[in-house]
Image (cartoon, rainbow, N blue to C red; front, side):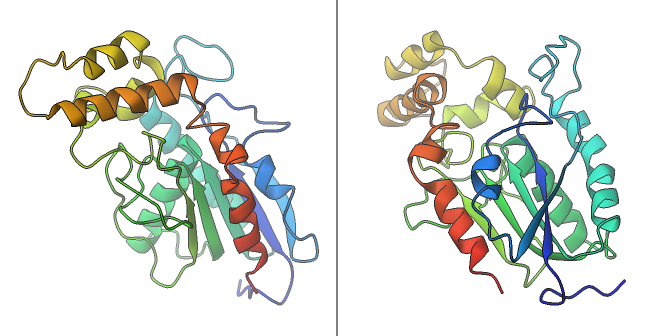
Length: 252
């Protein structure tokens, strides 16, 4: 089916973050509620598990892992796009941004060629590449490592809070080392503690690979994640989602 932006409205599909509700408000509701109804219709929330082990909306201690959630979500996302008569815009937050990012990687590699897209938007992407941001003050990159290429020519809008260690992790950081032993998102959501943050700030680290400044920066990022809302409410209070919605509304 040949679908052209401009022939009809664009259907917006959303991919929620880990443990967010499948129905009702979530982080991306702050974007979709601002989209121009003359251009966009809000479609379904992709019903992937949105789980990182025990961190999930069902409080299931044996919930799917990060990788299992993404693997389950990819065919569901493709099916939702194929079932939509309009061109599609994709939105993803946090783990959902990783799902969108993975889908775009595979599309650039030749898969899902029948899944036509108008644009994509990602918020707090743990696979963010350096400098990707709708703002000019971006720093670092996603804690999972930068994504592979996305489809050439596809508009992709990235909201990235520089104080969010999930999407703006410094290039050289002990947080990246800690993420090598387990899935990075599992570590970030389950194992970051105030005690770990303070030990980094105090320079208590088993290797000499990092400067005191790098250790302190890592500790500060953990505190911001745990207590400062840098991965959550900062995106609302800091206007990141407002700016993202404005950019999407400007698409023709």
